[in-house]
Every structure is written in C-alpha cells, then in structure tokens.
Image (tube, rainbow, N blue to C red; front, side, top):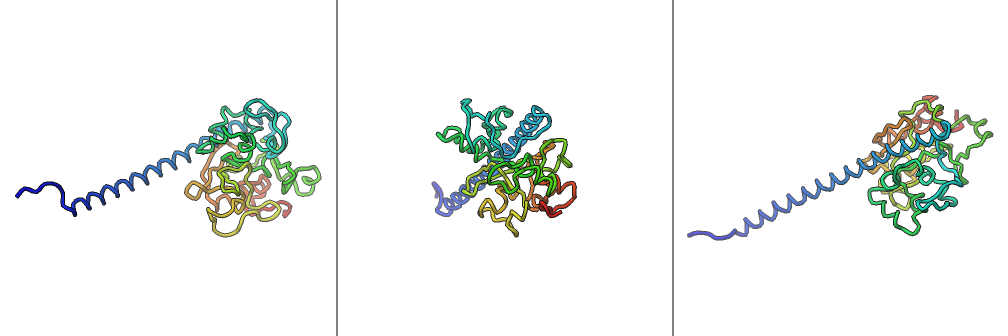
Length: 265
C-alpha cells in the first residue's frame, strides 16, 4: 500500500530541525549585528581622534579641554549653546568632525538628532566618553581636580594640555566606550580607576551595575571597551587592562606606576 504524506513522528522531527536551524540563524544574525556595531564604534573612535588632532593643530599643540565652557560653541543650526552643553566635548569638537552622525552618535543613538532637546542629549550621551580629568583637564564645578597653577604646583602636572607633553601616546586613553548611570548608552566623560582616591568599585565587573562603578566606562563588547589613544590607535581593552593608571595618566606613565593616585607621589 502506498503511503501519502508524513507520519506524526516525521512532522515532529521536521519541526525540531527547522526550529533548531532558525535558532542558529537568529544567533548568527545577532552575532553579526553586534560585530558590525563594534566595528562602527571602532571606526567612530578613529575619526574622533582625527578631529582631536585637528583641534590641536589649530590651537598651537594645545589639546581640547576635557570639560570647559566655550562661548563659541554652536549647535547644528549655528545657534549658540549655553552651559553645560557648551562645556561637554561633543559640541566643542564637532567643527573638526566631518559628521555628527557616525562620530558622536550611532548604533541607535542617531534618533537623538531628531529630538527637541537634541543639543542637551548629544552633549550628555556621545557613545564615547572623554578622559576629561587627565587629558585636557576638567574645569567644571563638579571636577575632582579642577586645574589651577596652585594645584599643579602642589601635585605636579597631572593632566596633559599639549600633545608634546605626552609620554606614551600609544597607551594614553583619550576616549572610551561609555554609558550613563541611567543605563543609557553613552556619556560625555569616563573616569580613571584612581584620581585622588579609588573611583572604580573593586572586584569583578557587574555589567548591570551602576555605570559609575567603572568610571562610566562600558565594557559592552564581550567584556571589553573600545579605547582611543593619543597616538590615534584604537584598541579593545579589558577591565584589568584599563585598571592600569599608566593608560589614564601621563604622570603615572612617566613614573611607571600602574596604581598611581594624584598627590600620593
């Protein structure tokens, strides 16, 4: 007798095979998409460093201040910005960047450019945060070390203000993957493991913990963060690698002190 169609067992086996293949395909797509997003961030970091160096070239070797109000800062419509938008790095570096979308906001953050409060959002949530305390100097009221001649006399030149001061440009971090304490991707600054005292929480990194536990650095790429160095090289670095203060502080690099704290030496 000829048999038409499938048996129940054959149908079940077919369903299982199709479901398995679909799951594998979905995982593969998610992996490819994540890798594409990481590549976008790496490319954005490289372009960001190009803009950073162009700024220095136009300012007699002086680097962009990490956080400082700029009365000449304007938004995409050419309108003047006010504090604190004009103090965070994105709008001050924007004139040296070929495009806002792709350097400061990308991988889903592009929608900020269409929001009514775009100027504020872009200033707060660039995908990469700046090592503002040790590169350029953090001149804001909330700074843990606001640059001044008196402070520099007391603790030494703890921040870089000129490219020519840099001891090891291929290691000194300028920008790194960042997130905000709200959980949103992106933050305008990242902070070193130590400044005047330890800033990062000790022990293992909790990816769901407060962003401030790791100085707003976000290890979102399989436990690593994109980091852009003064020399223009971009690397994926682990928490252990970024706990090394020689990557954050020019002073620490000169002293060859991975556990450096400002004022201790």
